[in-house]
Structure formats: C-alpha cells, structure tokens
Image 1 (cartoon, chains in turn orange, yellow):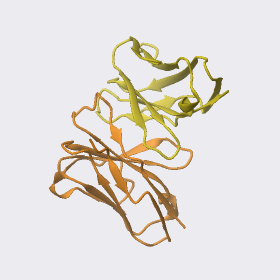
Image 2 (cartoon, each protein chain N blue to C red):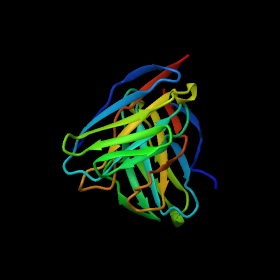
Image 3 (tube, rainbow over the protein chains, first blue to last red):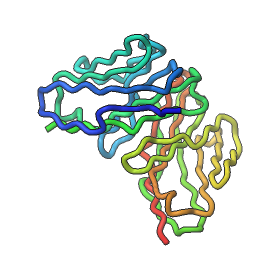
Image 4 (cartoon, helix red, strand yellow):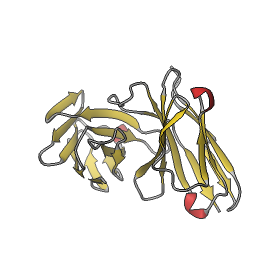
Length: 115
Length: 110
C-alpha cells in the first residue's frame, strides 16, 4: 500500500510569491489533514477534510492560505502571497477511521522556506 | 485550549531502557497518541491510550494516567535506530483533532 505522498519535498520561494503544496492520501482514506511545524515549535493543526468537504479549518492562520480537495482525492494547499513567517514543514496526514484511533498516517512533509 | 509538555532532549545508552514523559492539560480528554519521527521523515504512529494503564507493543510500551494528566513512553533494549524525535499528542473531549507537543529528541549512543 502506498503511503501518504507530498510534493514537493522542499520549496524555496521569495516573499510575495505563490506556492502550492500537494498531498496524495492513502487510497480510500476519506479523512485528510494538514499540519504545519514552524522551527522549534510543535506541529499545529491547519485543517481537516472529509472527502471533498472542509470539516474543520479552524487552524488556518489567515486568508493567504487556501486548501482544496477536489473530488475527494488529493489535496492542495496554496499560500498566496507567501510571507517569511510561513516558513516551516507542512505535513499532510490521512486516516480511514473518522476519529483516527489508529493514528494518522503522515507524509514526509514539504519543507517551505520563504526568503 | 490544550497544553502538552515533554522534555526537549534525552540521551540513553544502547541496550538500556528509557522513559519519555508527557503531561497534558485538556478540557476533557479523548485519547493520547505517541509518534516517532526520524529526521526528515514522516511521523509514524506508535501507540494510542484512552484508558488508564499500560499498553505494550514489543519493545515499546505506553502508559496513561488520566487523573494525573500524564503519560509515558517506555523503550526497552534500546537500539541505535531508536534515535529519533518522539511526539506526544492529546485529544480533548470536544474535538477529534489531537494537539501535539514539541517532541522529545532521543539520542541513543553506543
């Protein structure tokens, strides 16, 4: 079984530019989550999809972040325009069970550096 | 809100036993998770506790005390490959989204 795949693994962009991160969850996992880890801090929740619907987007920092999951398969997270404080590692995770009692399966993350 | 505390770094010797502690404060409680993360890789699920007591899985065990807001991850017969960051996360009663601690970096040396 293929795991959660994230692309790109690294991205370096200038402040003000746009970046789009992609996540392919495990096939059949309806639940998809985005998390972010800023250097030295904890992994923080951004949002949760159930299929194509946003179940909870309470963690999205501001309206420069836009997440989509068209068709309930892969998801994209766009940052436009990027700011310096957006630098960090963006993790995607998926789970089959709604409550995730078996834990999430995480991707390896996208390391975003805004310069 | 929630607060998760765990030590920043620990060191241990190959073959030894190490206990990584985690305390949490949540409004209600609905489960505690431990993940292992090697540098540059994805966090991988280790354990889930929702009831008090010890859950054993091979060399790894996880303990929970809900009354004390406390958990620990116990690693036995340490191997060099166990050097990694160990993430504690707790889920509050009102949410299915867990909150993560900053992780404990474990260094296993020969």
